[in-house]
Length: 521
Image 1 (tube, one colour):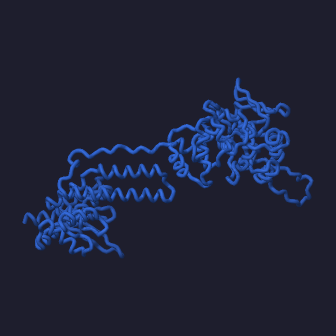
Image 2 (cartoon, one colour; image 1 turned 60 degrees about the horizontal axis):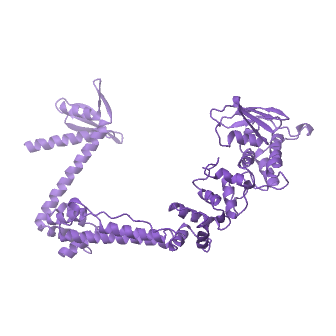
């Protein structure tokens, strides 16, 4: 028996040293500001055991003895008092949560051996009885504990399989949940901890929420496979419907005949077909309002209809594909169908009206942007235009398509050429302006110094141009070029750099100045 004192009025007892480690490092409970100096651990027969805090923040004990003897003693206690108290190996759900945490704390020593053994301690494994030239093998705590767990208990340091073929898990509530699912008896003193007001009520509330359902409804225990049970609880929880003693028998009768590999969707379909769960409600559609509440022309109305039908078909096709591969339930499909219809019937006339007005106002720029595109783009707009005006823009060469768009707006070939020339000039000027703006931003990010004055690259170039520097020169330096800006009157030069944007900014400034002089002349 170990007595643990963590304060003048707080004393607890544990039957094993592993239980002491579990109390200090694993068990939940109020331990604010707990320090190693304020903890005392004493065995009722062997006396005090030092306690210290590791760099990891965990507490450690330092019983007397070599590493193997210490670990053997810990495992002996766990086997005698917890796992095999009456000769039979107990499974996790057959012991208390506190007892299982002690077993887990003992298994942790395979990796965190320093919680019970000083890492600097040298093991004396009978070296005094060896020959002079014999070599003492280092003690492998991990292998020792792993082998001992398997030999003594029949499972590894993380516990046995929580379900046949499902792997191992060290979490106590997982073993309790799956034991109940199999219909195995679990003591009420264990289950009480997981009830609403229990000490472990929050344990597993995200991934094991069905544990509390099994506790509340004993009829579910052993009635369904893990997958069916979890899917049933998930569906009912999603719809905020309780599983009770009154409806459990019917739910079991509905779910039990389903295939063993059934999914959430399969269970959802079964409960929906039996009218246990209601259909999913779709929001009420809100008609468009304001300027875009009605079409401005028959073209806008037809385009609105085509776009709505296309989006409806696409959304319905996606939903049906999800349904076909088993990723969507029947009631979800019905809801998606309703949502697609709402989207189709209550969509705004914003884009159809913009397009129709562009046709009426002969806004060639907007029409080119929309219609002068490959055949598989903006198909609804092109179809509406063909139906309303007989203009075919698909299945024809790009030149023909572009010419028909201009003809729609009343442009002759000469007027088209003139418009395109102006558009190209405007585009070039816009690109040059964008380049100049980027060069200015880059230049502003650089730092220069002229005659002791600190300034950024933009200020430096502006200063040079204001002082009469108006020509950009370059000189070779190996395989590279060095750029300068020159003042023609005095032949004075100042350095420019391509990397920091000052060269491009100077070029853009001088180009603007040259254009202004040409206009003035």
